[in-house]
Length: 68
Image (cartoon, rainbow, N blue to C red; front, side):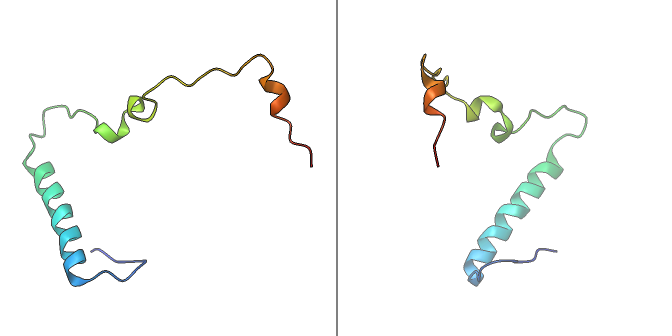
């Protein structure tokens, strides 16, 4: 059972969301159960950190203090 907890979707929006959920469930049901699944692209850590984070400069510690 699917329940809308926030917002007021139109019947067309609700039908579109249910179609996506049903298509995903059908795709998972038709997949062979013995084969190992690859993790989804969304769960890959490399997707989040595509570039290297710049390292702080030599006096970066002095800029971290914010006087109140």
